[in-house]
Image 1: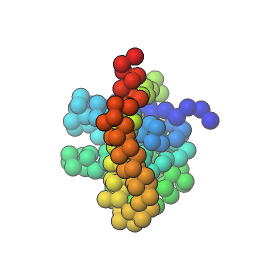
Image 2: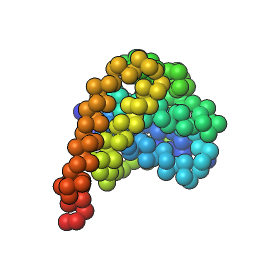
Image 3: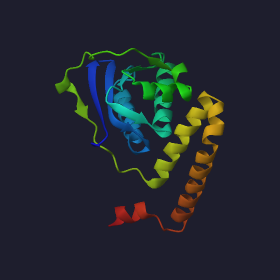
Image 4: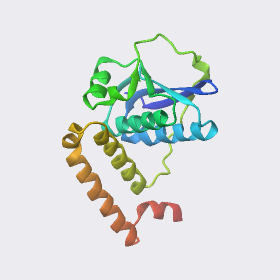
Amino acid sequence: MKESTIEFAKVMDDVAVLRIQGRGTFQNSMDLQNLTRSLLEQNPNVRFIIDLDKCVTLDSTFMGTLAGISVEQNKAGHGYLTVLNTHEHTLHLLRNLGLAYILDIREWTDSTTAHEKEFQKVASDHSATKFEQIIHMIKAHEQLIDLDSQNEVRFQSVLKYLKESLNQEKMRQDQGDDPDQKKEDE
């Protein structure tokens, strides 16, 4: 399978289309979050449309990230996140975790108003420390639990593992055994 990517195009000053190609996972969910934050810094009124036509699956961290973006967009008064071109499998995942309540899921469309050449590939940002990645994953799963109480049962073992990992990472940093810090020092 080819590399999973995130692309975006601004179709108007206040609308950006983001395409997820391949898999939406914990590995690229921070890239999605960073992209939306960056676009919001440029224009706090920007609304997001997510095109999942070329997305084969989403993991829980990615879906929690989508939920967080949707909730924040709604709090800003711009309605929930619009999601286009969801395939049956992806739609099932979104509905199963309760995201259908906070996403504006639209029917299949052949194209968006952005032309292919306007899309820019988002470069993966590998600068996040392991500590930051774990915190991001915890927040994404807590977002899913806040969304639907049934998700607490689904993700209690995941959260337990992540919180244990976070504690271990804190201890490593406190002992000066931080591999992320060693990279920076070299």
